[in-house]
Image (cartoon, rainbow, N blue to C red; front, side, top):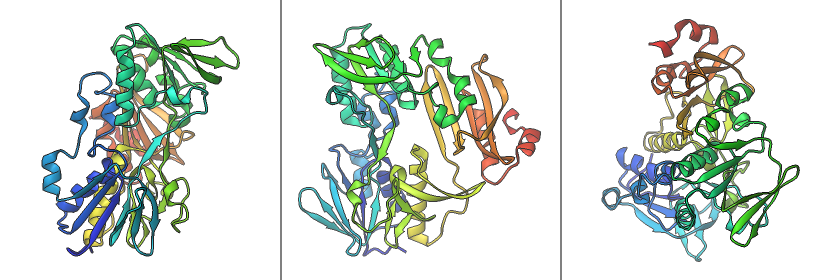
Length: 406
């Protein structure tokens, strides 16, 4: 258990890192906490950047989590604009790029993930939207763009679709370029992705699937997207939404197990006094199908991790209930929500609604056991069905019970 004499050093001042600060204080820890952040901004929430902020509905400051009042109440030492470059797991010491070191009794790795870049000629001038600096740069570029300007959005997944939606609402002309046969087919599977494919057209946004982009080049005041098998496309701006990469390279040589993230156990520990949470953690996840090693880039997973780690370090007690991952995406005027962590090749059956109605709910299953629930604009029905993933539920029993109809 954590003692007042301990010092918790959290590397990563994003959502997960800040939630851990709050959880530790809420659970009664009154020792020292140091929160290290590579960005120069106080901890903030990322999802609003591609939703409310890009739409112009929120000022970016509204996404701040660690307000001056909350910082004062948390009694945390906040060091911003410092990048961690190494970890001594024997001394529990973090090495920083400026040459200094921070020693603690407990270290938490919460360095999250970064936007994936693509090897295009004009990469330095292509936009992404992952953090506040990205948002600031995009805001600046959009200010110089005339209404009706064409913006090429490379990637039709969650971020790409959200960006295209907000660009359309601001009077620009987004063209979404997706490499797969359909957006989200590799995440949600062929059936569900087919039920969502019409959303872009319904929102009067052009979506081009199965795109083979050879390069993106800068030509005077515009970009030229060159394809292997199609005519060039010219655009005033280019935004890439091609997923994310976990930030764990700085831990190479530390002695921790690294494999598509920092490998931790069911209590989020990589070593007795070293933990990892959120996007960077590859964790042992007990679920309705047993247990598997996963890394899940969901806002809710980082939140659950922060609370679970604080509780474990304060009480020695592990999680009492199965964690049910949750994510959502607001795109093309609709809300996609999902519970669980189903595989794209799991069986899927739509149990209510239809694509034509613009709302539906579907169940994923594997071996007859429900592994996930996905909905389009059916938030209440989704939450009524959550218990199907809190303990093993058969598909037959779920169809009989039909909790989504209550």
